Image 1 (cartoon, helix red, strand yellow):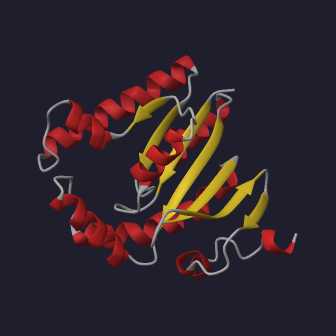
Image 2 (tube, one colour):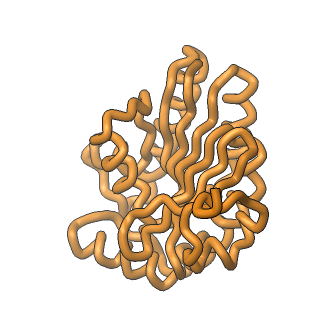
Length: 197
């Protein structure tokens, strides 16, 4: 069964970091789809909107090609665009297993700090107002999409990357009781506490 693995979360949350960590643990995520990496591989500039648009078109084409061939692929997303629901529904129809790794942070301000640090190291930037908006929209979209995901793993990266909750085959398990943003989002109000098992 092919897999569609999604690395989701607001800008600066640590999606690429988590991808690298899991890749080192010998996970196979198939073809990589990341428009930021496409910009770099084509010698583009993240500040150039034309380069960004070309990279996004290429990312859409790669996803279509993967689905047409029914091969596994992975994608990074903030979940704030309109395409994610359609991609997931199409992939499910084609028999894909949908796996999402969602990375969250305690506040939009922390996301802004992380992006600023990335820019200082030569990485790509995102306007602060976009990060603030995407922080809340991303969590809202996660809530909407949860029922379509076969395996959901939620990580908190406010201090260091930590798996705090998961949902597999409809069974929600809370692994960490003191994750502030997860508690306030009410995503896991009904769950099994692994510490009580």
